[in-house]
Length: 232
Image (cartoon, rainbow, N blue to C red):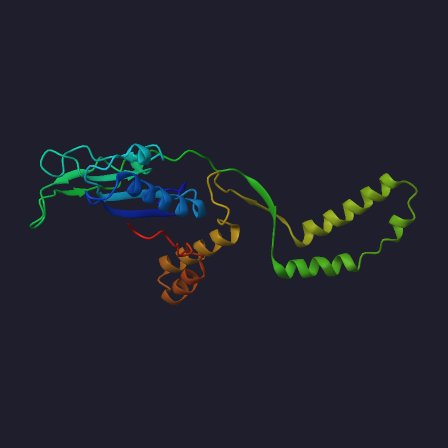
């Protein structure tokens, strides 16, 4: 899945010709607002039989209608509106399947997708090992600050304090160099990456038990239940 996306939302529509265009369009946009309010970086695909629904408001959402070939006789009634058009090939319209007189539509992921913008950056962070934190706290507790209290100037005291604390930090919580990507999501933490490395190593090693253990520990995308307005 593209790094820039956190979720993919798929909505299916059947627009009766008897339904008022404004009500149907309002319903679709309201549903999109509800979902994208919780997941503003979601990919959106709204598809189905729109008949002759006026779609200016949907296109200005903004979503792009990607089906150009007729899907029923000479009319484009079956449509796909999406913000993922850069990640998919132009949909292919195929002969109808079974009795329906609507043609089938296939939209496939592009194999020539442009590389996402962004780059790896080098960041220096301190270890977050819990045992080392306990040792650091104990070492700070045992520091003899007598020499600091005997100093004559504030500058000397500050320098002594920072030198002592920094040396202990370097000893117990040594700096680590990590290279996150500029487009990483906030939940892609060092622990997240570490669990993935352990999981993949177990997979390559054929250790099924450990693979399942780390697979279950890798945080997944949470499932959210969204209450949508009543269908027209």
